[in-house]
Image 1 (cartoon, one colour):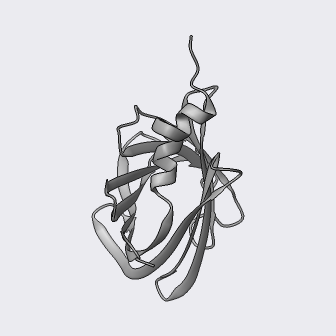
Image 2: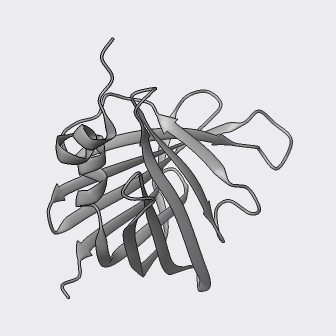
Length: 168
């Protein structure tokens, strides 16, 4: 099995897609706590920058959730040996003191990739799943959509970030 080199990936592969996400972004974040019931809409500012010579992208963002300041960080990469996107994510609203690890769960499209992780049910039940989809719909428009995955496997919209690239 041929594995793509990092240099090739930077030129035309998954690391090129990560590089295309780089920049300053702003927009709106919407949050659902229950399926179909929008709970909050807030402005959001984000930045994505390369780290470790483009091996990873670091996403940082600030917003509010129901009036409380929210900060978040995600380190996103593509593991060439596994052929999958990988991510670690933490924020001050959704994760508590957990750092969620996510792994690509579907085939990557030219401008889109999806990752899946899980988190513990605070009431002691089975773990719940969490899926995050990054979609660069154009060079100036980025959607980062989060889904809660119930232990039964049903998905429900949880967070939608609609971002526009900031010039300058």
